[in-house]
Image 1 (cartoon, rainbow, N blue to C red):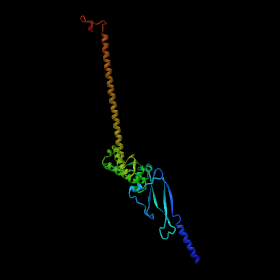
Image 2 (tube, rainbow, N blue to C red; image 1 turned 135 degrees about the horizontal axis):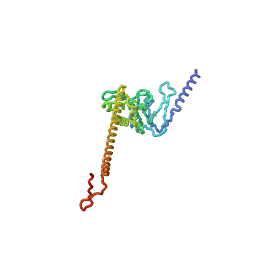
Image 3 (cartoon, rainbow, N blue to C red; image 1 turned 45 degrees about the vertical axis):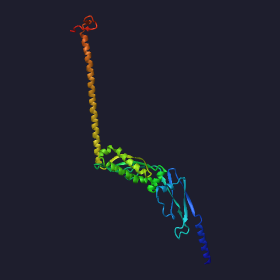
Image 4 (cartoon, helix red, strand yellow; image 1 turned 90 degrees about the vertical axis):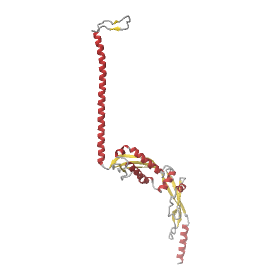
Length: 303
């Protein structure tokens, strides 16, 4: 029994010694050129991560070095946690500033996602249609990374593009298209996209995101296929009318040209005939003159 007590005491001493030996450790993380890192201190116990209270707090937590150390402390989280548990003293948050491109389209083979992400809208006369769009965005600077992290709490840029950015693009597009008829929408596509692009770019710039590309792709797809068929029929009719008008103008131009040519030929022939008649009726005598002035000839009677 005494031996057992001795062994127990020695074992406890060893455990205590191990517990207080090497009470800290650290890991190193290398920051890439396209990344911005933030080292956030954690509260005692590590159960609550620091909240991003303000942009100023994040700016202070931004790491300038290219290598960051995450430290850990051994803590006893419960009475039974005799050896202790490694708990991080800080949290490393990394914002990736690499450009991201999304293609929001209907077809699974033409878009970024396999689901339908096309932008749907209606015209003033309630003709439903959808369009595909391309969008590219980037977190340009480290200051933009501060704004982005504060606004979106460590979400990925691609996720924000497929949710908030796409939603605002669709809202702007729907609002603008509802004011125009379908024919006006076809005529004002560039104007509508300029409105959408300006609003979306300005809104997300305040949140650290720079929109570099935003435009329509793949044309317009109508909800009702008969609408497209009618438009195609009208287009063909218009082109036929244009072709007929060109043909008519060509015939008129050709007729005018022929008439002008005939007029020139007729006038030329008339002058030649007069000269020929005068030559045929000349008696071969020189002209006679009136008075002493020999500069005024009087032709003999042709008869």
